Image (cartoon, rainbow, N blue to C red; front, side, top):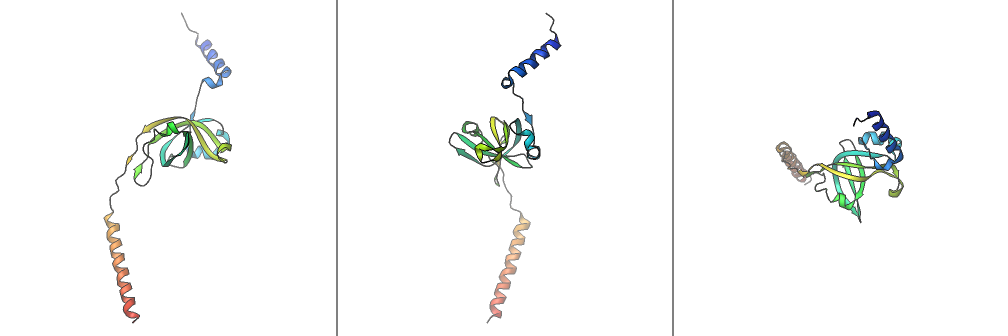
Length: 163
């Protein structure tokens, strides 16, 4: 049985037009692109990738998570079940999980006070976060001790001068 490729493409195209919700395509975009072209992406399915930062803020059956792609952080509204996949959020002591979110972009979400956000439908963890070990900078420590000594000396001299 020989398949006519043109006929197969026409059938696929007609299926897409007839049942638009049955085939889901999303577009990978950066935060800069979403912010600069918010009107263009409003209501569209997008794929956004970045590091989970701050806190996972549970709100009943849902949660807010800020995701930073290195340029900006965007708020992502997701089901609490999806949010439970996040083990590390980025802060001074940790590197957050690297996530890929597929969801509907809103430039002015009516449900959330007109804020720009993404309502996640899917969440995929691309990389695990980790604890970041900070080493003490010895140069800064030594400079701090010298400055403290100078301040102490000035304070002692002002005490003797005032007498």
